[in-house]
Amino acid sequence: MPSTWTQSLIELIRRTSADLPRDVEAALRKARRNEKPQSPARWALDTILDNVRLARARGAPLCQDTGTLVFYCEVPFRFDTRRLTPAIRAAVRQATGQGSLRPNTIDPLTGCSCAHNLGAGAPVIHFEFAQRRNVAIRLVMKGGGSENVSAQFSLPDTRLKAGRDLEGVRRCLLAAVAQAQGNGCAPGVLGVCIGGDRATGAECAKRQLLRLLSDHAVEPRLAALERHVLAGAQKLGIGPMGFGGATTLLGVKIGALARLPASYFVSVAYMCWAFRRRGVALGKKGNIKRWLYF
Image (cartoon, rainbow, N blue to C red):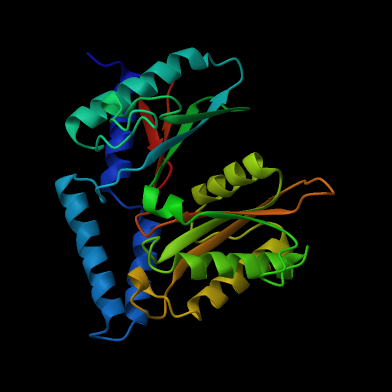
């Protein structure tokens, strides 16, 4: 019999895989209203929204690529994480067996599937200690197609005429969207980090995807850049699934990390329309206290 921790995590995985968060669905419906009737963009969004409805009703995965599983765990001080890691792995194993996850984790040396989606570095688990009483776990399922069009730039970039400033960052982000075209399953969301090193910048960019679509960066200059990049991306005309139209992105979320004098990285985590992220707050025995996204 699975532990309460494992049972709760199985439900987190199932809901993340099958039930698109309401803020993302609302953004897709708004995008649909902005597209011309009978246009390829409207047709693409109608198909996407039908998929969202059917996946939720049937409890089936939103996409055949159930993605890299990235767990962000915020735990109280002195919490023993050794009991949580095996619970997460057990939940991934059982969710795979139940069909909430597809067996699409591959061993890079043999080319064979890793049993139950468990392999070296899979799933990805981040722990952070905080002044809190319960455990909060957020899950992002990051599909391979969107990961393929994620990018990292090193400024200055003469090709883009991008210098080491926020205008240079803006040029990089629009270039990333233009390069992705429809391959990232637009309309997408950009998670961005300015600064850091190559590894921390990429991780910080992906962490921005935990934010709600309705929020904005606390730092006013970053909030302004989020708005400008979102507006600029819509003018590219790439549209849903690359068919053209008014909505190429659903959101832009930007963070920043300290950097070295020699380096100025701009890291971009592209997320497709199937923006699968959910979260739960768990009690001391692992029972679900509340959901963190709706």
